[in-house]
Image 1 (cartoon, rainbow, N blue to C red):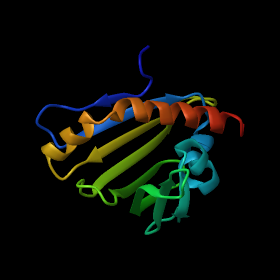
Image 2 (image 1 turned 120 degrees about the horizontal axis):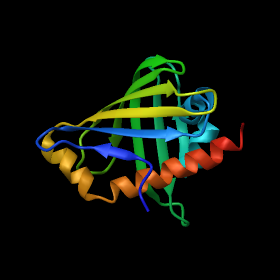
Image 3 (image 1 turned 90 degrees about the horizontal axis):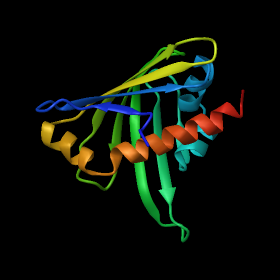
Image 4 (image 1 turned 180 degrees about the vertical axis):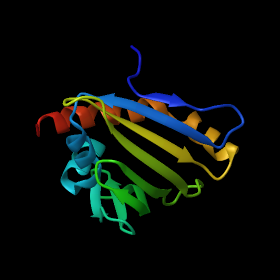
Length: 155
């Protein structure tokens, strides 16, 4: 089965571009990235902090059944234009991966469909390639499928 999420990673470059079209109006897709309760549902993580404003910040944390932290990520929101774009940093704590820069652009395709384009810049080509060796594409596609399912119920 083909993945609905497309990842363009050009050889020798330290960035990648992710695109995904959703059967969601633009306003709902944007809410999926800016409202803590919705983010927690589709990402399957605890949203400890999410200040969806320019110069805001966020922190996500996932725990196992025993309450041990297995994943923690945080970042700063540098640019925030409602229903258009979010520019932010993303850092996974307790890993060897350095902070990355993410440019998220939200686009209305019709009254009922929208598109997300995420341009991610890594510190180096090597760091980007390390991420791509993980089950990155499958995990992202699954997360975006959950986003579609969760958010479509809000409509």
